[in-house]
Length: 165
Image 1 (tube, one colour):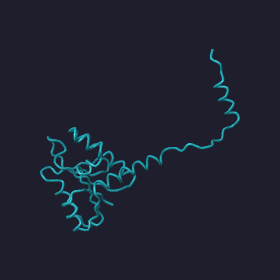
Image 2 (cartoon, rainbow, N blue to C red):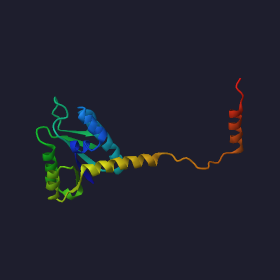
Image 3 (cartoon, one colour):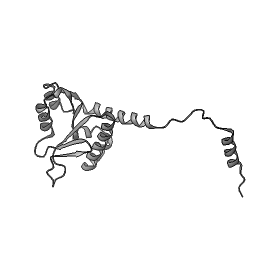
Image 4 (spheres, one colour):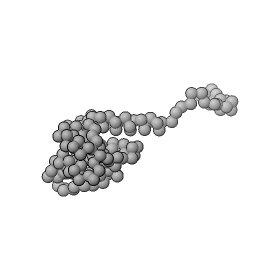
C-alpha cells in the first residue's frame, strides 16, 4: 500500500503538533509528524510519501528528501494540492494508493482516478492507535502468582528483618 499524505493537513490533526504550528515552530512540528510516521511505518510496512506546501526552509530549494524510508516532497512554487493531484494522475495504478487529506478538492479529484482516500482526522486516529497498541504489546506482563522458592523467601525475610546498627 502506498500512502500519499497532505503533510500540513495531517499535522493539524495531532494536538501537540498543532500547538507547535501555532507557536511558529514549523520545523519541530514537521519533524514530529515525520517521526510519528516513521514509527507507524515500522509497524504497518507501508510506502509513505508526504507532501508539504512551500519550502523546507526559506533559504533552500530542496524538492525531495528521504527521512528514513519516507519520501518527503516540498512543493516550492506550487501547492501541495497540485503535487498530490499530479502524483495520482501519473500513477500507473492509482487504485493501489491511499490519499490522506481532508481537503475536499483533492478528495474529489483523486476519486476520479479510483484512488482510495482517508480523511486526515481518521488517519491521525489510526496512527495514534496503531503506535499505542504496539507499545502496549511490548510491555512485559507481570505474573499474577509468581513461583517463589523457600530460599528466596528466606533471603528477603533476612534482608528486611535486619536490625539497623
